[in-house]
Amino acid sequence: MHRSTKATHKRHRRVVHRKQHKAPVITLRLAPLQDLAAALRDPLPSSPSGDGPYLWLAGLAFTLLAVSGLSMHFLTERVVR
Image (tube, rainbow, N blue to C red; front, side):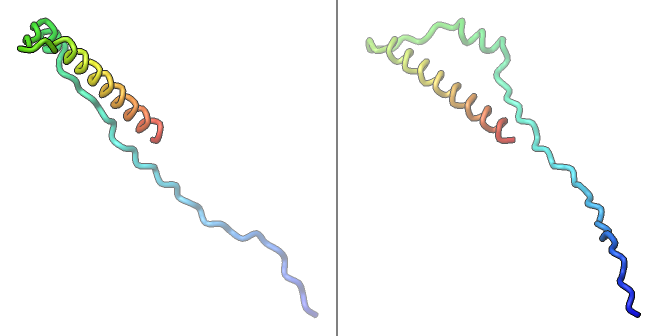
């Protein structure tokens, strides 16, 4: 007579989970506050032509654009991670 074999469960290998490597933290260091305050106290040099205020406003607009672009960049890098 032929005996049927008993159904058994296949033993599964134990999966070893590896720890995910964390990226280093990005730190942004600005100039010390005293240096910034000293730079703000110094008078702006006068320009020989009458375009001084317009150039100053253009520089301020460019600075705001650069700061907002950097903040968006760092925000998207933080969200992606």
